[in-house]
Amino acid sequence: MNHWQPFQPSLLNGNRIKSIPMELRAAIKLFIDEFSAFETHIIGAALRALSTDEVFLHGVEKLLDLEARLNLLRRMALSRGADPALVTQLDDAIVKSNALREKRNTLTRWRELAEKSSAHLGPHRSWIPVKCVSPLDVWVPTVGEIDACIDSTYRLKTTMRSVSERLNQPDRRRLN
Image (cartoon, rainbow, N blue to C red; front, top):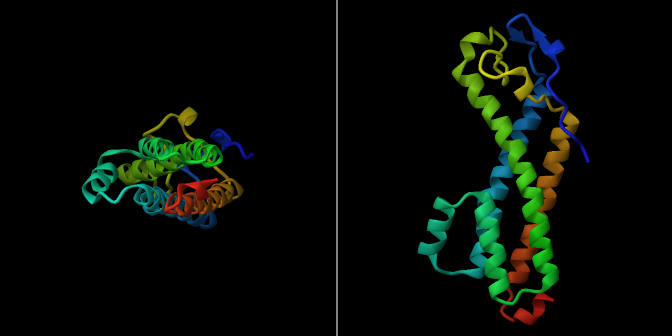
């Protein structure tokens, strides 16, 4: 399992951070996009497999965060008598998606902070603003770590599609 490495002060050059390579920026953008698709489309499809009430589903998607939607999905599956192996898959997906969500949120905060403090970043815009966060709060992932996050997101999408298909079967005995 890849672990995020803490920010290294050697990356600083005076008040500017050396430019983040385009390959890393592209990987971060792809990860954020893929995780957002997982969070909205894939989890939405899984919830629709258990409920046809569009008003309820719209409210769930609008008001609940990812963790709450996954927990609701788990409870709905349990209430419909889902196989324990399927519930275990959901539990595993909840744990993995929470870890990936934290990484996505960190990367998104970097980008938002950089946009707010672009005056401090010089001509080569970086996603990590120097003046807005403490060096102890900044993590600089490698392309390999972001690629691992992307791969994990693809696996989560595949798992949740499989769960959705099993939940959508009319005969609940097929959930075994």
